[in-house]
Image 1: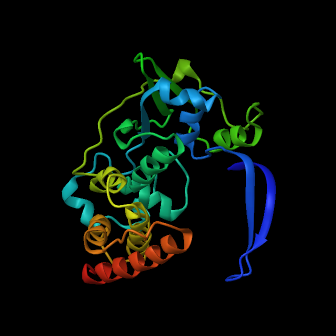
Image 2 (image 1 turned 90 degrees about the vertical axis):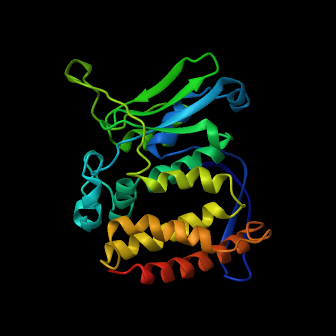
Image 3 (image 1 turned 45 degrees about the vertical axis):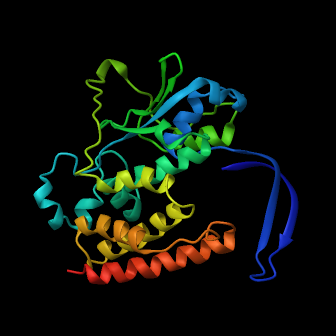
Amino acid sequence: MLRGQISQAVVDPKSDARIVVWSGGTLLPIDSEHSAIFQCLPEDRSAWGSRIDHILLTASGGPFRIRDLATLSSVTPDEACAHPNWVMGRKISVDSATMMNKALEVIEAHWLFDLQPEQVRVVIHPQSIVHSMVVCRDNSVLAQLGTPDMRVPIAFGLSFPERIESGASQLDFATLSNLSFEAPDFSRYPGLRLAWDTLRGVPGSTTVLNAANEVAVAAFLDGAIAFDRIHAVNADTLASLSIGKGDASSIDSLMALDQRARVQASQHAKRLAR
């Protein structure tokens, strides 16, 4: 969410689209994990760099956190979309099952909070009560907790710096039986590692990853490829697509790179079809 004042509105001659230019805007994250990090940080953004050692993005682990790895090739779209904690659309539900959603959140956090790739870490938290954490330079840990309900970060974004009623239920700590955490298993979630690979890669790599994943997930939902082939499409697209120095230099060049990545990913998906 971007809040501020419009300083200029121009028309793009190529598309006749009205482009709004913002001045003095404040970028407010709405995704629950990034909102949690933002809520744990001081309002003075200039202090962020001196406070943060690293951040921990929590992940539920999705519906297949303890499923036998040998059976992932037989996962159906309906199974992949049956998230244990959140009610979401089919595409993001599949991303949660592969943890590609968390890979993309790592990339987002790198840019939102001006962090080095190694300062953004992920921990599995199946209960989805702790929405993310900030580990400070003195090793204090700040966390934002709440029920798994998107109305909370949305209400915070709408009312910042104040707080309004969100409509979400309050946590009942007396009945909260267990909060557990575990390291992500990269053999179960191989796509997660691609977040750091692309952040350290050639500029534009993250665009290729996002585009390839959209193609791969669509192919899985259409029944064209198996669930465990989603990562293969993403990894093969990253490995085979040549990214030039100017491919991330402008919006137009990024859009062109995105289209090239989708074509390449589609070819890989067809090669890996059932």
